[in-house]
Image (cartoon, rainbow, N blue to C red):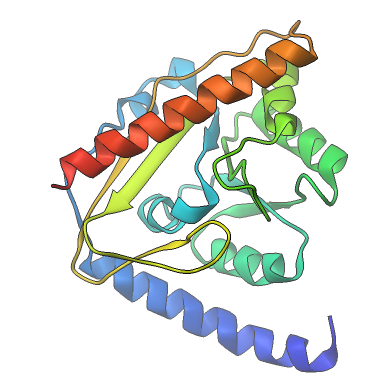
Length: 215
């Protein structure tokens, strides 16, 4: 990171945090199905949400102390600092950089009863395709994966690879957590791939359920 970027990063993070915090105050969250958070037998867990949908859960679950896997790419530093301001603990790594280290950190956090939030199609896609490393982390740790879907009635979509969603002020919004999915520790590579595809389908189905709630 060059000197100019370092100099601009602080003000950009502060501005970004203020804008997102104020946006969160205007959003009208409708009734949510978050029963899993009350069931301590299902926690800690690995919460999965698509890269395009990360804003709403970030705003809603602020100051929970969850750990979040954030890439080591250039924009990852900006996102990491924003996450810290919202009360998350960043784990730096992704499928393309620091993958083995990231998996080890995820497993370690789960062992100490700390839930982890992951965008399994990040940092560069393809969109809505789960990287297999996160399935392996669940296998090693023995803790479940919880699919997460979120949406808002009024939303702006960017032209990025993930069609990133920006909820608009005063919009209705909703978050839905799917049932915990346990991962057997003795899956082979083909079974890991099939499990990832099953979770992808589940997350896409939950997205449709959330969309209907907002109609």
